[in-house]
Length: 401
Image (cartoon, rainbow, N blue to C red):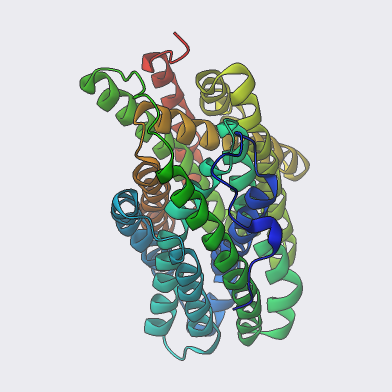
């Protein structure tokens, strides 16, 4: 691997607190690469369905294999790296994603496809806790902004996946998925440099006097707040899973759209989500994470209720609004939780990213069974009510007090 550029070299111990935007952008770029691979999996479901004669339940099981491995492993990896950080694990995680892509490209049976999906999940489980820690280390106090910039890379990747599938994989066939392994290799190179920077910062911080312990809330209040945040993530990610896994099929069924046209509509949702993530943390730094969570989760409810009944043109508009508003919550939720439990950055990042993956994976599997039994439109009528759980935000503590 090449040596890191001078700009990623470890800062001296006496350097003042400042935001290291180059490091945040580097980790955001790798988050984009990681999530391109993830969204590519969902975007090629119609192609895999046609080639392997998959049912909706089998498609849901693939999503569960991907999201389930990420869900179980992420909090465990986060807790382990809180005790003993391993900055070079970032490159290892991207390597697992690379192998998963190869399995998806050349696999000859459904078992290979499941293994490829699971390896992509393992790569994400390794990547997210340590990458979130790097973003917070580089934040210089702008924790919401850093978390937004980090996450917007992931959302941009999620938006690009269906677009790349529509214009590269669909015309060229499944084997074209293997070409994206080159992106993963580039990500491994960047993450090696970022890992060296983070190791230097960690050693410099260890040489300085320990900062005073922050004031924390009572344990029961913290556990209640974490549980509420988990319910909010549940509502957000079950709805997002209904879009990422089945929105293409919903559009084809309801409006008789082509696969490429439906993939472009999915791109609208995911692109709007990327913009929502970009602004969510910045607004959280300015107005408080709690207010952003109110606006994002509960504020999207009228639009999700309208979506199953809207004509095609309004479906596109509602797709953009829902993607933007709903996605703005997650950076605020992660920062809010990290403030509740100081010193457990990796564990909290792993817990919430992992819970997001897990709820999304379980939801995808169950919604696939529901779609087989009741029809794809019924899924969206049911999921439309999920943002009502945003009312739980009233029970979150006001940390600014």
